[in-house]
Amino acid sequence: MRNIRMTIEYDGTGFSGWQRQPDGVKTVQGVLEETLGRILQEHVRLTGAGRTDSGVHAKGQAAHFRTASGISVYRLVHAVNCLLPPSVRVCTMSDAADDFHARFDAVAREYRYFFAEKPSVFHRRYAACSNGPLDPEQLNRCARELVGTHDFSAFSREDPERDNTRCTVYGASWQKLDELTVFRITADRFLRTMVRFLVSAQRTAVPGELAEALRTGRTAQKITPADPAGLFLWRVVY
Image 1 (cartoon, rainbow, N blue to C red):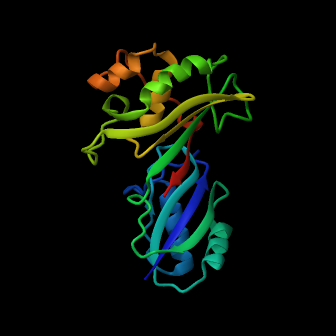
Image 2: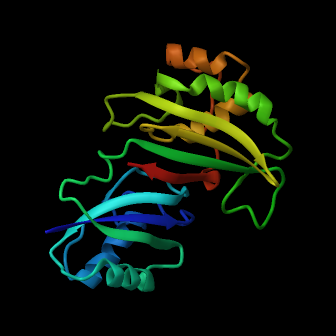
Image 3: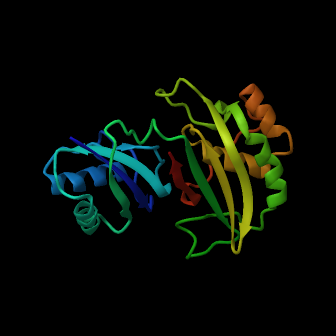
């Protein structure tokens, strides 16, 4: 059996997230598995580096799967992209070591969140609207409090599959890029909806507030996750 490694980009609009669902709703993993199965005439099961929520996009999702087929990866990636919907594309595909695991071998993941200052028909699918300018300097004061190893349970939804809520954030920053303001965060792992909660929290927090929430596991005010349209799984590092 070959172990095939791949990177994927997708527009998450209209998908119920990455992970295959038991009730047959449309997911990115489900569409990819169905398409690969049609080509390979096998039952294909993908393992992704991370799960993205409904409406969240990916620039560099990673995954692996096993196959008994001898088809070249060049032919396979071409065939897959011919059959996939325009919202999903396999960027790279290669034969990997037998023990390669897309999730467990990853050492870091980077997410980016985009804000547009005003409503726009051109940004609406890929950026949230901040309804006014953001102050990157003020936001970066809050972002610096996220760096390090902390318990992020205050900034995530409950997940019965998770018994460890500690994550190590390697970097977090805000930057103005032309018409958009982008938040970048890199960590060894992320909890469910963690980035979207952190985006919302930083917009209203005062210096020291996030550090206190990380220490106590409680936020000073109720927060709701930011619009999924602005979030991208940007890259996975191995």
